[in-house]
Length: 309
Ligand SMILES: NC(=O)c1ccc[n+]([C@@H]2O[C@H](COP(=O)([O-])OP(=O)(O)OC[C@H]3O[C@@H](n4cnc5c(N)ncnc54)[C@H](OP(=O)(O)O)[C@@H]3O)[C@@H](O)[C@H]2O)c1
Image (cartoon, rainbow, N blue to C red):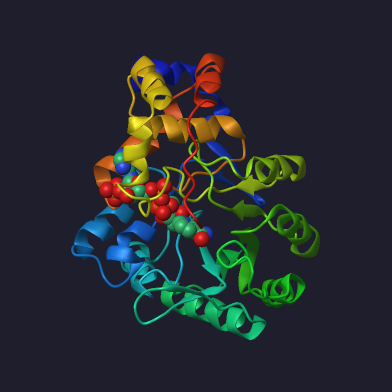
């Protein structure tokens, strides 16, 4: 069955869902792949990067994930250059809590004063008065044994900025189940952004918690990540169960992975990352794919592949 054949089966749930009080298309775009190698420095072809962004918005994407530390500055600058003044209804999600070292390494930087400075950096580089969504990026999974920033202090800094009107919505990222539960209570977070895919279901319980609270789950690494050896899409294509479902529907393995996420939870919002217009179009077409119970049972057998995040 081809994508066009399956369009008739598309439910309204495949097209849009809530992000806080707003409605966004369920297939958004993750902009991290637009920076240079290792998300550090400029891309080889900045014009292509801007074309990808414009193409995404022209195709109906109204939820783009970014961060000032992508580059640093590079990705926010590309978004601003390509899309400012931003179209009405476009939600730009950013994140705070981390920093980059001189070699591009990822470091925790989550003191409340630093979070405030990072919000200002994002306001400046995106050239907006208010950030639509700021995810607090925790490092409890990256450095499990290390002392962690106090969650209430961190969210206190962000809720104060929300009260000031510099942030519209707050989310939580790279967080354990208990942290997510606390963040819902402390700050009314509208979404969780953790690694999650058909290859990595470690956070099944967090998806279920999001459902319980009616908040969005925005998986990063929805295709298994570019950082994993060979790239996540290659692992998806090599999996016999993913390949069988792909063949049945006449779609690609990457599309199966995205369709599986859409089927997993009605407030799952996708932000697949790509620097390719062809891949972007392929990812957007997933809104027309409906997996059935037999497909989902088969995909439960996919071998896990966890990227240390
Ligand atoms: N909160 C956090 O800590 C955090 C961490 C990581 C990422 N994120 C966000 O999540 C977004 C998504 O994660 P990600 O980009 O790291 O990983 P991903 O979406 O799982 O995978 C991206 C990789 O898949 C490839 N790809 C994309 N579409 C494809 C298709 N249709 N067919 C074949 N290959 C395809 C991309 O290469 P091409 O460029 O060649 O298409 C890239 O190598 C990021 O862009 C970023 O905004 C957040």
